[in-house]
Amino acid sequence: MDVLAALQARRSIRAFRPDPVDEALLRQVLDGAREAPSWSNTRPYRVAVATGDRLEAIRAGMLAAIDAGPPAPEHPFPTDYPSPLRERRQATGYGLYATLGIDKRDLAGRQHQFRRNFAFFDAPAVLFLYVHEALGVWAVLDCGAFLQSILLQATALGLGTCAQATSGAYPEVVARHFAVPERYRLMCGVAVGYAADAPVNTFRPQRAPVEELLIDGR
Ligand SMILES: Cc1cc2nc3c(=O)[nH]c(=O)nc-3n(C[C@H](O)[C@H](O)[C@H](O)COP(=O)(O)O)c2cc1C
Image (cartoon, rainbow, N blue to C red; front, side, top):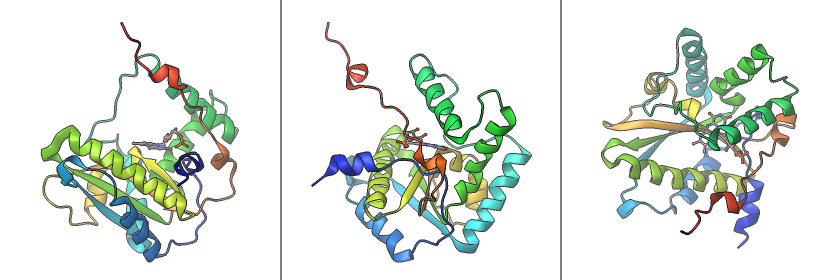
């Protein structure tokens, strides 16, 4: 079992080839991710799988939405990034732009790259993850375990992925195309496909060392 190899092989993919992903392969990804642990085994999440014409309609809807008004996610995006979270976030953002050859003062270039999120980086499949509101943060935690399981299983099957909070920015656009059950709230999306041979996909953001994650004893 080489779990470390899978963990290190997975990186966010932000440029996809147009090749579609076989439905059976997407099924295999979700089938594997079912092995994730869950609060009292409740599985407080659901998945909307968008491909083909439905995905194209959602993509167009998302791009229209970002042009029409600010994001309105069901789980509000954070606005407060105290140190050292702010520094890590900034370093990752600047690192991504540097990989793309976008100067950090080039606002138009940065905006263009940000907008690519709403086209799901041209991925041929997107999984929209919903959580049941009744379990609050525990549903979100379960969804995180499920999300990572999806990402790792996809990696093992040769697929590229990008978890995207931005895919939850306009829940009504997605809800136009899926019969979302009551009390399920859109959490995020996962872009899935085959990685394009593009510079952006070479970006390897740094990890905080373990020492920075540990809490000192008294
Ligand atoms: C919950 C969650 C939401 C994310 N949302 C986005 C997003 O909207 N757009 C994006 O480009 N990357 C997004 N990411 C990817 C992170 O930026 C990425 O995981 C982080 O920079 C580490 O890089 P790596 O995934 O390549 O290891 C998200 C990741 C997670 C876990």
